[in-house]
Amino acid sequence: MSKQEEIREGLIELARLAILNQDPPSRLAKEIIEYLHSEGCVLKVERELPSYRNAVNKSYNDYMLGREDMLKAGYVAVEPLIENRNDP
Image (tube, rainbow, N blue to C red; front, side, top):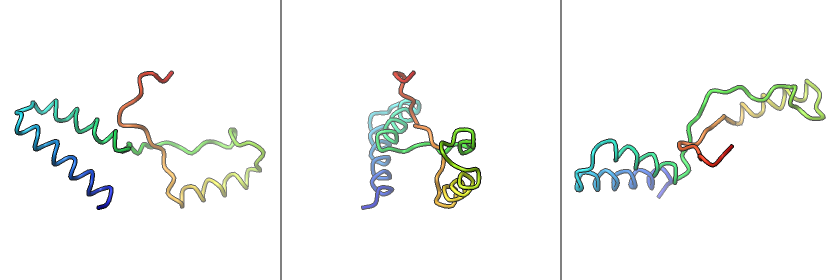
C-alpha cells in the first residue's frame, strides 16, 4: 500500500468515526489537520531560493547553476501544517 493510500484510509477512518460520534465539522477538520501533520504532510509555499548574498565560497555563476539544478530537481519551499509553538 502506498503512502497516499495509507493516508486516504486514515482519512476515511477519521470521517467514519466523526459520523458515528456525530462530531461537529470543526472537530473533524482539526483531527484531519493533526492526522496529516502526523503523517508528515506539509504545505508547499511560494518562496525564492536563497540569494547569492547568502552563498558561501561560491562564484556567482556556480551559484546560479546550483539554483537551476535545485529547481529542475523539484526542490520547493515547504512549511508544516501545524507550527511548533515552542519554536522561537
